Image 1 (cartoon, rainbow, N blue to C red):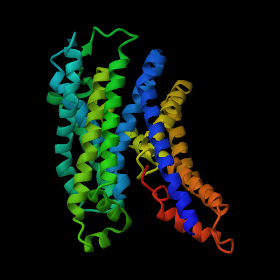
Image 2 (image 1 turned 120 degrees about the horizontal axis):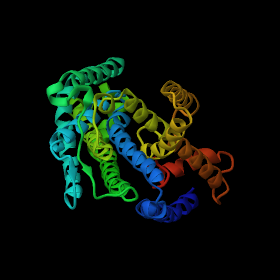
Image 3 (image 1 turned 120 degrees about the vertical axis):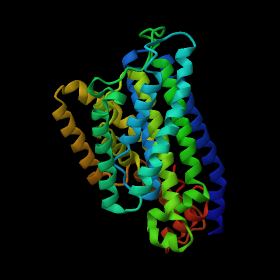
Image 4 (image 1 turned 90 degrees about the vertical axis):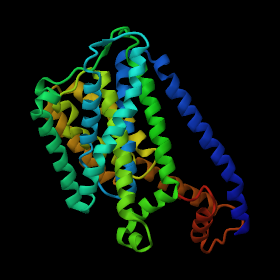
Length: 368
């Protein structure tokens, strides 16, 4: 047994080095992507994927870590979009450095969306399970109706027009938005990683496993859930603001789109709910597929049917998501590999290898 443990511990630093090198390589690829692929259509898809990855990572901080499935985060996407449009509506066009300085308004809109999330979350989180899902959906439709009817503020169906950076030509226009979305994604991933590996995050995971037991063990479940809900709304609100600037228009069906909630949830389920990399992987799988379907089928009804079929297929065929399934296959391969290591009791090698893997740093699930 000791020889297997030594063998595993000796390989753990190498695995960590490989992981860090891989993450650094991915970051370099992400930074250099728009410089290599200069086609505006490809960069547009990349911007959409990054923004949805940010929204999914934010959604995952709440729903993935607490187990509460929220289907109303389009509320905070819409609030972020409308707040940004209202603040910048008087600027029809922007030139020079001002076009870049406007990006500084994005975190402000996220904070305003987070403030709105406090009363919404406080009400919704007084319920659980199906009742919570229904309340989040109801909040979405309430806000959508308000966007249509509060014409003095939202301008109704005519919508609002955020400024257009006229200095940015067609070949360059997408690049500032790409890097802004990349910064948001890195910020969202850093926040998600911190939550996942903090004492606070352990409380959220305890709520996901058994909320009543977590409450009995001293976890302040109410405040923990509300904080996660507000953090989630903060990131989704920033996505709404940046998307509004990117498209230069905001109207009710754009800002409060039920399909947004479906896509964010589908992205997380596809990649792996409750994992760090799952929302990112899911976004970069689903968004190109979504764009391809949109180009192939101009009828929006067909597009919605195909998205629904994909959702059902993921839930039935890949319920744990790509990342957890890949992790499980990797663990099984390691167990088979450990069986062949010297010092394993052949009579019961699997139990020993499982114990060794659980005791070594690389053997535990780390939410990657």
